[in-house]
Length: 99
Image (cartoon, rainbow, N blue to C red; front, side, top):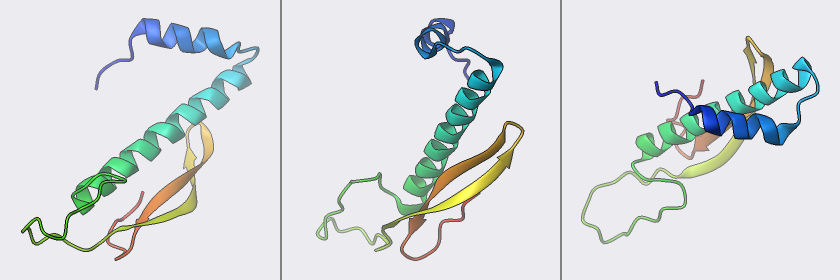
């Protein structure tokens, strides 16, 4: 796994004006939630074979599944940082397994 460049982390910390460790922990929870959200979106992209908002042509000659994205469901995940609420992407056929 690649480390976040120190300059990027410093710019983020400077922009947040943290005043307590609680502020820092909340920011870490938000970053974890956002990273988890991106992982699930990427998994669904792989499962469906196309990215979000991408349209498939009916005439492309390939035998692709007609499974589509179908919104989100909320789920609370217990982590070492505390509980984090995430939006789990859904597919129409119910084939995507979430966390």
